[in-house]
Image (cartoon, rainbow, N blue to C red; front, side):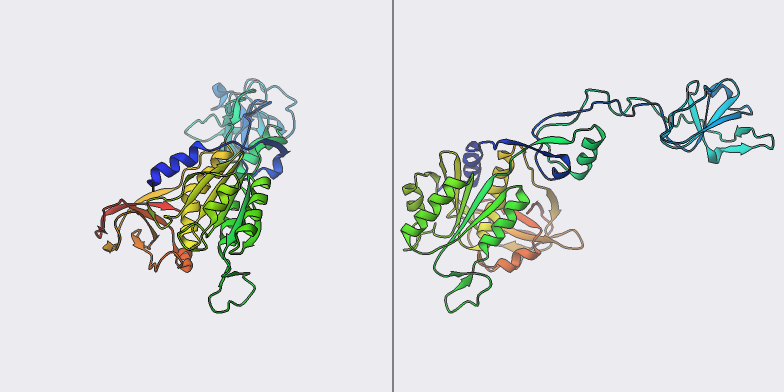
Length: 391
């Protein structure tokens, strides 16, 4: 059995990156950028008015000014502004030659002779200077970035309509056990609905991968072998839940070795999730996660999600908060690293979830994250600052 830190290191050292594909920029949100994107223009591409107002020479701003034209956004100025002249200008329009300041409409007075005058006290430039945001050739988005909606706008602004992104890893999901049935069925005595496959598929999607469900493998070694072999052939990652503990029908590790998987660890000193198995097969990475849904959920978040992100060239860092514990907490077993599901109350205090064990899946629906308790630590005191890792 190895520590969680050792397990994480082994998993990350086994990463291989997925290939690249080119897609329309409009479809790129939540994908991982696989190129530097550079601007093909200066931004702004001209001296642009930041307000609705009047463009003039600063030296004339306290004089009565003749309005020589009106400049709407999208139209080129037709006149050069000279001494004691100005142009009425709209936000976003090109500042005409001869002007070095724009004052707002709200800071102007109109005279009966058609002239106007600045009435403000604080003279502001109110001009967005050509290239002040971005110069031609500047990198506006860096390789390895998780593309967000605002990045799609950036790509539109620099005319980058086809974008190179990392391919989503294909993640095969296999649930094991004769006791499992489809969620649409009514469980008989000793049966349970298969929640793991759907939970993991949703987690894979959130992590940026593409989940492929291979169904339920019965407690039959040969059938399980054939399902695992097929998934390994077709996927970048394979996740098997159940069959990795010490029961008579927990033969997944042996089946993995038979399928050519080199197992790098099969026990982790963590609770929940001790019987977590990890191995590699050529260009496929294989996880054997515990069958209990809480264990599989947490181990996915701790080990598989960072791996999926790293495969796409993205280093995902979980959001963490340091907050006080709302009440005393004590655990029964202290020999393993404890991963304790918690929620954050309205007073921004951390409350351990009422948690009855690794099969208590409904407890996770109200969980904001997990806190860790090192081996040997039995209790935490009310008010103690703990680190909450969001899941």
